[in-house]
Length: 257
Ligand SMILES: C[S@@+](CC[C@H](N)C(=O)[O-])C[C@H]1O[C@@H](n2cnc3c(N)ncnc32)[C@H](O)[C@@H]1O
Picture (cartoon, rainbow, N blue to C red):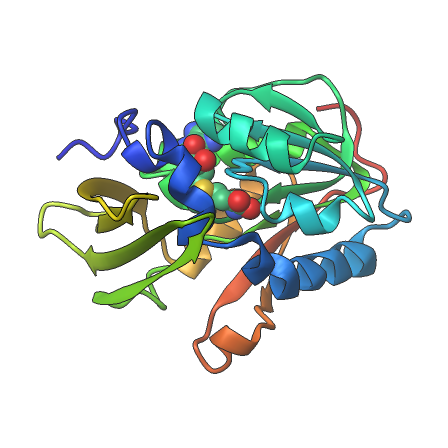
């Protein structure tokens, strides 16, 4: 297993992308998006007006944030961008890699949501954080939300899914940590896809995820130029789990990128 090589063949983000809204419905994002907006409004030195979402996926957070912020949405996978374009036609979409993209523009708010968990090495994570800094306006805020840090990770399995437009999806998510991985873990995902005629397809993806201690997150956020901060994740499904959201605050006085 080579954690430094991103897996370009994840079916969920390519040929199965149209099933993604059944795996994680857009309505489920309302509570967390409201929390992110409160954080942006609290920590941004100016009234926040613009947002860059790096790793936007299906645009499910953006669907809730776009009422308050003018959104630019970036993702590596063309099929995920197509999904988000359908949901968020009023938003700008750009294909790119969060480790290297440079739009030469600055935003009041930069969001690297769960997609940042795909940064499977410290080098990739540092590159993604540098991208966030390069796009954060003076006085602005970047927000990072890995699925886990080392302190909150636990191996385990979960299941879920939903129905829509005559189709249905159910999944089993199985997180585990191979002995060979120093700074990451594996999420094996099995999908059961039921089409309009009742036919069933079974598919599997192996997601390679990064895992870093809280102290490393705070150090790397500071290293790229932000003032780092960790705040508890206020969400009804995450009470007492110890989950936090990391913020990078960009000083008003800092110069160029
Ligand atoms: C779970 S989805 C994100 C869902 C998103 N939070 C939402 O609101 O819908 C993860 C996304 O990360 C994207 N991704 C993974 N590595 C990336 C990279 N290096 N640069 C940009 N996007 C990346 C994938 O293509 C995928 O669309």
